[in-house]
Image 1 (cartoon, rainbow, N blue to C red):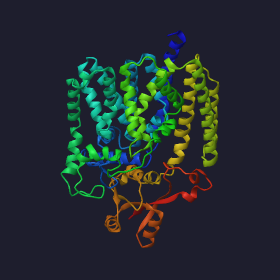
Image 2 (image 1 turned 120 degrees about the vertical axis):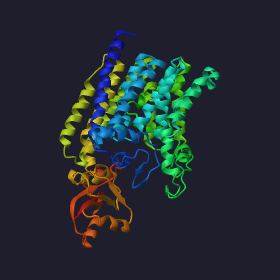
Image 3 (image 1 turned 90 degrees about the vertical axis):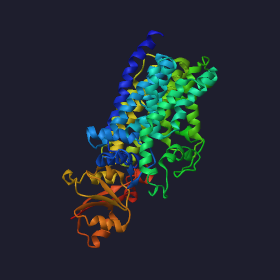
Image 4 (image 1 turned 135 degrees about the vertical axis):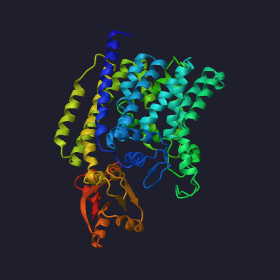
Length: 548
């Protein structure tokens, strides 16, 4: 390795530090509806009711996801309070641990330069950073997968004690998303053993010990599901009774979604994750594309152990692509492997000509990002558009004129410039603008903390952000009879639509309007909302009543 490369890998730690800093501002932004706010509310219920076994969301027993992410958020609430920061912090810490395990995996299967480059890439991949802000299960799941794989690697090389953390990580992954996680963790190992002719590994008792430990570690999940659902066949779940939580965990939530035969259905296309990856892995999509071509056509090393990464990526991507239920964020769990594959290509397979072409693509991406931001600033009419425009322009100019001591370093600089432009705009300007239209959050801040004991309810609308940010436990009222029973508990707060609020007030309800806020589902942006001239046509009004 020449001195220029040595200097680059030494400076790569500064890239990583910048990447981590770019992720931090999202921790202090409000939680987004629907999924993030729903998950935060489920964890809030755990703490307020001191019930760590039963999950409740949207006003009923909740079976859609396993317990682990909610347990982590609830533990954080106990330490830092029931806040948006408290909800996001444990996921962010898991993401940091995922960076560490990505480094270790790349170092031990490839080499140290690949390891260093892989974590600089992973730190600012678009969808990974966005999920440190809009937290769901992915930061936990991704780290559990890459952590389990590295500890399995150590165990396979004679460090037997690593079986314990490997099984613990795998079990936490299963308790985050379900048993299909084991396909991502173990699929690459199976392909590696087949390619290397290591048939004896299928009978090696170390892996049977690993499987037994996984089963042992998921017992808290199985016990929780059994006590909440299997012991109570009278509960109505997914519109029917006699629902087994354990059956759902092992079958319906996984195979049911894959074959689209379970209670939760979707629609899928084999090409969905191909085009999703192109934008979700920005600003490194072109490098990943080049890496895949390189591995298929030109890689001559063909080190069998690397199929632990290649095989896992291939199997998981295929499972996602042919699943009947597809969502863009599913692909995030492969980002550590995408980063490793891209880094290996960049440091060992990409010629100077290819690196120059990739750098030009980064420059085009940087300019296109600037144009998109300028268009958004013009169309949305964000109050701070002048400041946002100036900061964006400064970052773009800096990204255009900064040069590295090598073409690879220039490529990284341009990529980080794209990331800086995107995340500074999103976290400091665009998302704060959008979050004004989460009416539930905006109304909840008008409830005094001294009214924590005053009952509160939601009627006629959906607002997980109100449920979470209101200082008290919030009831979801489903019908008029239940509404009448709730309103009899005066004083109380009621969050509803303006239409319903006006109707209640006109009918003689003695209440005052505490807040009236605009609402729009900001995770599904449409041109009419983006356009400041037509925004009022697509927003709705939400009202918070104080019934006294």
